[in-house]
Amino acid sequence: MAINQLFNKIAPSYDRLNHILSFGMDYSWRNVLARSLKPCEKVLDVAIGTGDLSWAILKKKKAKQITGVDISTEMLAIGSKKYAHLPIDWLEVSVLEMPFADNSFDGVVCAYGVRNFSDLNTGLQEMYRVLKPNGQLRILEFAMPQNKLVRGVYSLYFSRLMPLVGGWLSGDKQAYEYLFESVNRFLTPEQMQETLQHIGFEKVTYKPLTAGVTTLYYATKN
Image 1 (cartoon, rainbow, N blue to C red):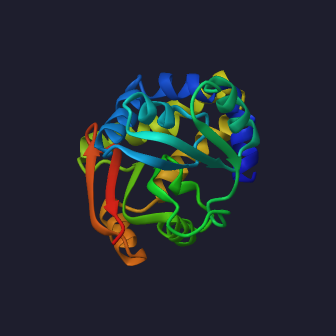
Image 2 (cartoon, helix red, strand yellow):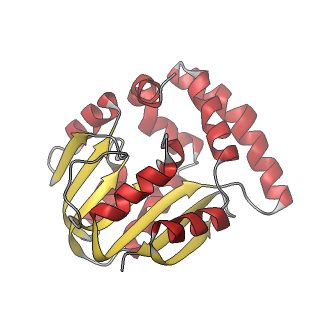
């Protein structure tokens, strides 16, 4: 199943399941990203989904205007209705070919979307292209914890329990099986750091959150 079809299918239950399956930690993860930004004018939210990251950024007054792009029609429809009162432009656009001029945004952010890019390098190159010089990049993404005990519990939860609960509540067990598979095969934080540096980003660092189950990446553009 194509990624956009998968997310279109689970869109109605997406927010509720995010909160349930992360035990509410998804709120804090997005808030950590939002707090890390310096206040600016225009931010691009890649794979905006239903807009919870954009809401956190605007609530903390870290941006005045946000443009959100996503390939899921249903996610955009839900988000644009939920946050109709906020200064967010919602566009059905692929990160691999964005219709923005070079150096358009003061900040580019992405929460749990990069591992779904069909071509990671092209997507990151596009994010680099549209970011202004001295602009801020922030990426949140799941990772496999380094601690063996935590990793074991995490893997068991992701591979067994999450598909059962997610499938029961959303009606699509396959989508939550895909979640574990996509995290398991994604780059380690060290590999992701190297990839961002290769693209051209500078001052690339990362911060493990919640025992390493998720990682916040920081970078700038020269």
